[in-house]
Length: 335
Figure 1 (tube, rainbow, N blue to C red):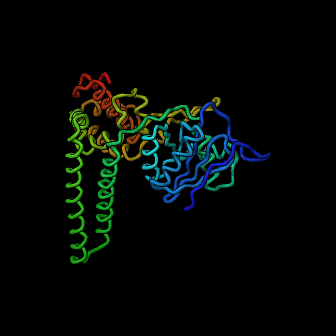
Figure 2: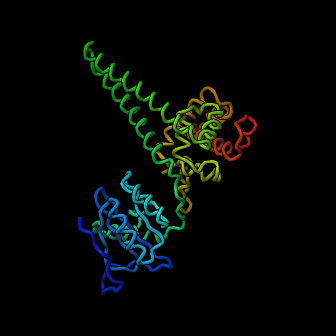
Figure 3: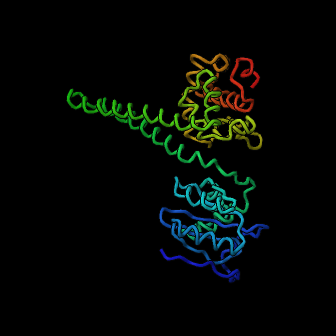
């Protein structure tokens, strides 16, 4: 990959023009091997390698152009290391949901697509967003990766169990059953290792203990909350529900009032909370059981009632962590 240098601030007639802002912003289109970079007010884009040498070159050029904020899309992990590097160098780094950039592309009717164009779109969106970057806890990156492995093991177990149904020959079934047993053993071992590593940090251990005090939240769900939603306990409960993706959203226009629905949010966390809320509503959490019964009695469908229970569980967990005290029936009712 050939390193480049950003060009002059002069623009030619008919060239791409990004909206002027009070702050200098850069947009980075991230791929596995390279980074395409665009800066507001600068016509040319630059390409650097997605490795430490490229990051250092990028840092130098961003500083030369007075950039303070850098935006990039979430790309499944390829952005993580360069984002961490730039944060440590003092830049405000905004990780954008790709849907934001796609929506901006449609608004601008930009049909052409290249990495350089994408970088310019990312820069424009980064300059517009009002939510400032909150640097993530660096400790959570490795834990999140470990949790992802455990989730993949769970998916592999489910696939093998489905595959088992297609076989009747005992010798073939035995092969699959042995693999299921191996995967289940590995998953349990890795979950134990992950919890042990989390508990070496006092703040994480305290959060896990507080969350486990809530009926229906076990170790796996508590770990998922700690890793995937570190903000919980420091935000308003309605904001927490939005982040999980269980807040009812309006769908009204003129005189038409649509059915409320959920959308977006953190899919991995919502999946963990779904099972916890289901168990709580059916068996062990008095608050969720009462809520589920009331909603069903009023004619709400099962799935709608369970989503409401997830939302209530998020409110409860948020209150428990905010107060730094274990769950009680009375506190949950007030949550």
